[in-house]
Structures are given as structure tokens and as C-alpha cells.
Image 1 (cartoon, helix red, strand yellow):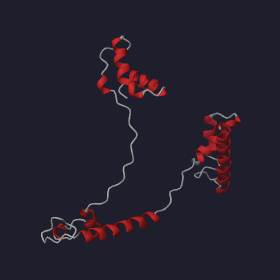
Image 2 (cartoon, helix red, strand yellow; image 1 turned 120 degrees about the vertical axis):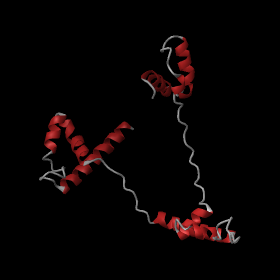
Image 3 (spheres, helix red, strand yellow; image 1 turned 60 degrees about the horizontal axis):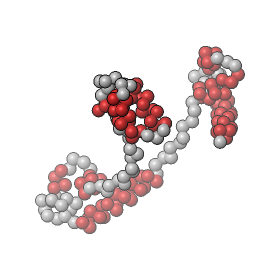
Image 4 (tube, one colour; image 1 turned 135 degrees about the vertical axis):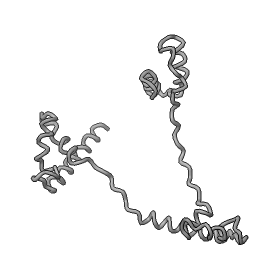
Length: 182
């Protein structure tokens, strides 16, 4: 954001769903003397439009050539059946289609064998603070106790069982809070 004035006006307009009127509001505020005269309206960033997910394009014949033969083989490309401008004048759409099918099969296999990303949870420290912060302890007290906590992997008192139990308690607490807010 260019400056605090624009940021404040932008925040208010966003709250009321009128982000697209920022230039008009700033021009009017400038005319009424509510903002400084030298406020640069050109620096106002327009609200970002939602990106429409575009379908990915199929690879080009050259991409397919690189898929089969690797990169850096320009002599082979100049005579390839995938190249419309081949020096041998031997372009073949059938070869392009066959190579495209191989490429898509390899891509599908790669995606099917890709490891599933696990959702990251809260860190042991955040779990410790969450579970112990309601006991009337100050943050500095919690921080000093963390050093010797059985949830701290660097502590000589670390216990995986205690950490697993704390994670379970934390998730239950989180679910209770979520259901209370519904």
C-alpha cells in the first residue's frame, strides 16, 4: 500500500464491499480537502481480480521431443518427425499424437505415484502454550518452563508419549472451540 491514508480508505471500502470505488472516493476527498493535495492517485493499486484457473495447454511438439530425447539435442530436432520445419521434410502428426499419448500416460503415472501431502499441525511449542496458557501463567513463565518440558524435543525430559497425548488434547480443544463458534 502506498500510504496509510490510502490503506485506511481501502480497508473501509473493503468492509462495505466497494473496493472498486477507491479512485472516485479519493478524488472526492481530495476535492473536499480531506486528504493532502499532493496525494498521488496513480499509485493506488486496483483491487486484484480473482484469477480464473486456466486449463494448462498441451506441450508443444518441441516439448514432446525433449520428453523423448532430452534437452540439448538440436541436431536431432532439426530432422525429427515432430518438427514441422524439419530439414528432412518428414513431419508426422501421427508421431506427435503417439508421443502426446505417451507423455500424458507418464504424467498420469507420476501424479498417481506422488506422495500425499500431510496437513501440517501446530508445533509442539504452540501446543504447549495453548494447553498451559489458561492456568494463570504469564508468557515469560511459559517460555522458561518450555526448556524442561517433556513436549520439547531438545529437552532431556522429552517424551514422545507425552507429545502424542498433548497433540490429542490440543486437537480436542481445537474441535471444542470450533464447535462452540458454530
